[in-house]
Image 1 (cartoon, rainbow over the protein chains, first blue to last red):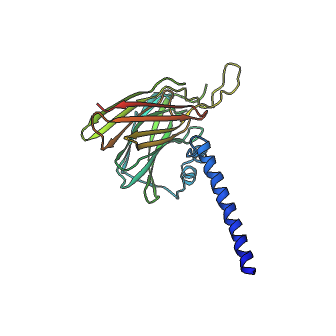
Image 2 (tube, helix red, strand yellow):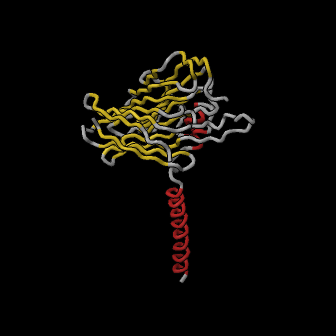
Image 3 (cartoon, rainbow over the protein chains, first blue to last red):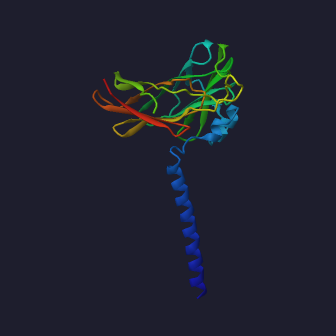
Length: 156
Length: 103
């Protein structure tokens, strides 16, 4: 008798959990792209950005190369190429240290895709730019480079 | 609906090099209009590229990506005639998909 009651209680418990999981699932599909990491895009420092991506302290690496102009005349459009030779690179992010929010973009690199990205970002002022690499085993590596900006691209 | 993307996909050695130019304001949410009111942020948040239905790149973007974003990347396993599709979604939930054939 007692055992039966136990089982019923357990049963309702797991049903509730299932219901919650389903609700979470529905919410995910409901909001078109739930995988946008808002917490990471709200951060202001490299350490916080890495934390928001679920990592520990990042290590500096010579296997990451940032190619960009040393002086950008127009901060509204600064071209960057980031390339990683770190084995098992899983994702690559571009961060601008002195922008209002440090994280500019994060790219997931599936197997078969070269860890090489070319894009353009805005820079509010002269700043260090950081390329951050996450490996398949969850480790973070970075390289940085200073880019001087003559005319900022964030304010009005 | 936003303007179509310009996508160019071509062979670079044994890899496919994709170049995409999107048409989007990428408003940062930091700027003010002539009356001093803040212009709300409006930017592409997610970009996905697929080749034969397989994701070859996915990205999360913040408002710091430049206006009318440019993106270039390379992936293996494609051949001329294959299709590459790019989809973006912005923070208003607006979405656009365009396709190109590998040259």
